[in-house]
Image (cartoon, rainbow, N blue to C red):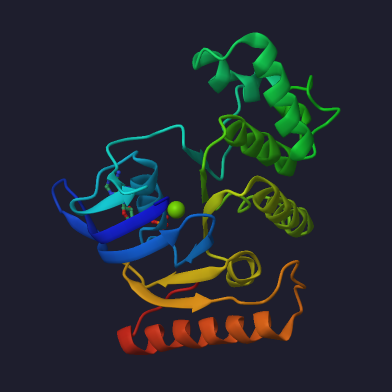
Length: 257
Ligand SMILES: Nc1ncnc2c1ncn2[C@@H]1O[C@H](COP(=O)(O)OP(=O)(O)O)[C@@H](O)[C@H]1O
Ligand SMILES: [Mg+2]
């Protein structure tokens, strides 16, 4: 079965003062699901995504992908970070092409695939520009095209729109949903923006402050395409804010999300 099975995963970073960052995470991520993970800064969101990407091991517990334990990174899991880290000396086209080039994909097929995904993310006409000619949102689109060009089954996205202006961010969210539906990927999307999580996700997992534990999972059943002012979405946002308030009260914590 495709999808992830996260079984009792904890993460403790070592060093002179070991800190528990994730605590007993138990979660099934369905094949084709759009899962949003929401949590305050420092609660271990990036750590969890890195574990799913195979970039770090869990300290205990295990992660299965398609029924098999994860042992490291894999092409079927594409990662998109907040900073797309494009090579400044390569054009947009060449940046997107790089992974395929390294993977030994023949040139004619590379050209077709790169062009397909650049078109899909809305970068047609910008193929031969260099990264410094692009806006932040366009650089993020290039990062997305690069991840898609490997034809992953899963997109693991770590606050990918965190650094772009608000209106661009809304457009990127719409476009990501269109791509998700067209390409039938599983998406795990980390954010600390409540409205973004609810607008995008089939489910929203709310993590508690460090060590990150699953506090609540919110189902978002609103039909797609969704409207941002849909009362159902607004109600879920309210429920999430209420839970965040509860956590703050219980733990007597000062945190913002
Ligand atoms: N490689 C690392 N070594 C030691 N501590 C780390 C490492 N990566 C993250 N941490 C710590 O783990 C905690 C959670 O980090 P992170 O997963 O980046 O949280 P988030 O993405 O939710 O902000 C932070 O306190 C951070 O300092
Ligand atoms: Mg992070």
